[in-house]
Image (cartoon, rainbow, N blue to C red; front, side, top):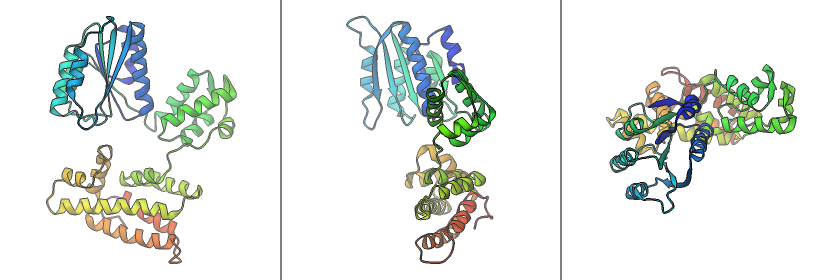
Length: 337
């Protein structure tokens, strides 16, 4: 069966499946789901644990052999498989299907992957048939205040609206940071009320406002958010030369991909040539769909002017030009600089 992570606790109360696939891109929530499954398994006598990391050249026979080995002490065992790409290939798919179909009362298989594509592969269907597929979705911007409030209340904190709002602003997009700051507040204040002033005094700014997140926001078309991040970077004293380096590098890659597509090369192949990470391919595809190669070249010209200004070679304001690049990259086709 397939369930969202929010329903995992209630599912575990009913029974422990023979195998689990936990898939998602939010490290905190994935780890908590895995810990919850392990905790339930320990209560049911699973004392031994064996972990396999799938890297290049991984021998899938090791996995099938481990699943087939009998414990000398008749222990219940957990076999964990870390699959960082989410794509085990033909041999791996067959091995996983074989292992999950052969699980019994003394063997629990636990598979961890990043978020998977919508079209379920054969090995994923095998896991669903034999056990549970847990989909981990991070709270979106609308859900984050409620998520933070609930997490604080679970620790005995009673936050007011200002406290929750300030935490949301300070830890945007970073649930690990949010959890750390909530724990810090619990240690600092103890149980009880938490105000916005308390958060202001206690919480460090842990938002992911760095040059790479700025670039991703612009590529994804989130113009307002990207401009806000650019302003935060400026306020934090980040040198505009570094920002323009990141934006220029991204624009060059986008221009090359767009040129390849225009020449008849498949977009997927063009992305591979530029070594675009799998988890960024979606936003890059969207950006290529919004702009032409000419758009990217025009923005590169602005970026070069901004870089020259940032190095003191011209009297132009580099931040104004950086804003032009960020906004142009985020805008639909025809509205770029």
